[in-house]
Image (cartoon, rainbow, N blue to C red; front, side):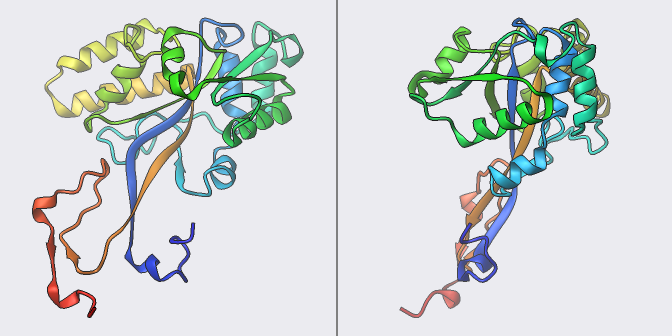
Length: 270
């Protein structure tokens, strides 16, 4: 926050850019009430992304309406996300097979932590849902040291935090790796045969334009089915001294050192 302040001397040396990361919340679709798509959509539409980013993340992120971060090939600026709409969210909840907030089963949010401490992001999310939908959510802490092991084993509540940063800059590394029915990282147990067929076709499609179209179709299906609630895309920050030349802040935050050089005329006098 200090370096982001324009009055801070280091601000002139600050480089910012988007990263290939997307954060989201996972709904376990095999556990009631998130076995109903309307409940998942309701929880997604009762979430104010911008407020969450401003308050919890101090503005250091971009709102995510879909899976692909802005710098990723296949990012679709025309994607139809689920908007923040409390009235529609309440309507969807009443139209679900559960018939409303007062008829939902007990819901548990699994966070990474210890004891009774509630993380700021968890508290903000739960408060939004309680205020907008009138639901009651229990919070449990999974030991941070083996949190992801517990998630992988299925030892979690109906909601838990997730996120992904690209191993390589391709939409396959997001859609297929996270949402194909057989994907190891599909921790919410989401399955859609139509999506699987599109992802499997895209694996071998050699026409680049058609391949991107397939992955954009896949993303829209994922957004509509709401197996996760997309929260934010990451931003990158780095301070670079003026005498360092050739530095490029890449979306994967991998500077190519061989192109870096030092301009001795700009080195501090001491």
